[in-house]
Image (cartoon, rainbow, N blue to C red; front, side, top):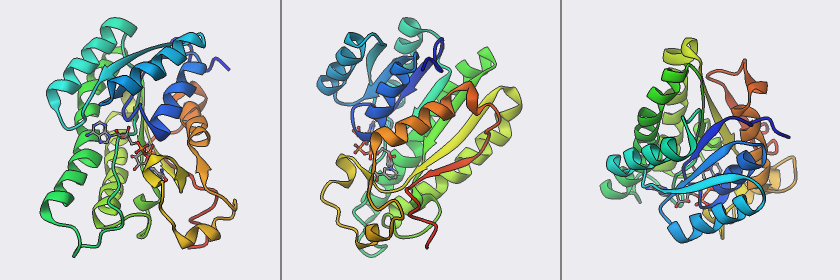
Length: 246
Ligand code: NAI
C-alpha cells in the first residue's frame, strides 16, 4: 500500500490518460508527486484531488520540447518536494497511423521531438539528481509500437522503437550507479489518445478488451518501487496479450 513512501516522483503527461492515472497511483502508494504538464487548470484540479485524498502533489508546468520549462519544473519540484528519485516519462502523441507518404517533414519531426527528444531532455535534467543520491527509477512509456509495426504510423512506431534503445543504453550506462531504467509498453488503452480509434485487431486481444490507464498505473507503481529492485533495462508489456498472436 505504501510501497513508494519516502519517494519523490516526476510524471510527464501527468494531466491526462496513463500519466494522470500513474500520478494518482504513485501518490496513493505514498510518493510525493509532481504532476507535470501543459494544462495548468486540469493539473491543478488533479493535484487538489490527490491532496484532498491525503496524498502530496504539486503541479509543474512542462512542455517536454522546451528545455527552459523542463529546468524550471524540475527545480520547483526539488525545492517543494525534495530530490526526485522516480521519473515517469509518459508525455507523447500519436500519428493517426500516417504512412511514410502521408507524413510530412514537419509532422514527423514534431512527433519525434515530443516522443523521443522530450524523453531525452527530461531524463537528462533529472538523472544528475538521482545520481547525486545514488538511486532512481526511470520508467519510460513505450508501446506495442516499440516492438512491432501496426500500433501506430511511421513516426509513432519509429519513435517508440527508439525508446527501446534509449532505455537499454540508459540502463547500461547507469545501472551500476543505482539507476533502474525500464520500458513500460502498454497495449491498447482507453485514454484520450485512443478515443475514436477503431482498430479491428482489437478483437484479437486475448483479454477480450482494451486496458485501462489504472491497470498500467499499477504496473508503474511496481516498477517504481523497491519490489522491482532487480529489473534493469527491461521491457514490460501490459497489453492483455495483444502481441502474442502476432
Ligand atoms: P494522452 O493523450 O491521454 O496523454 C498524453 C499526454 O502527453 C497528454 O497529457 C498531453 O498533453 C501530453 N503531451 C503531449 N505533448 C506534450 C508536450 N510537448 N509536452 C508535455 N506534454 C505533452 O494519451 P495516453 O494514452 O495517456 O499516452 C501516454 C503515453 O502512453 C504516450 O507516450 C503514449 O504513446 C503511450 N501509449 C498509449 C497507449 C494507448 O493505447 N493509450 C498505448 C501504448 C502507449
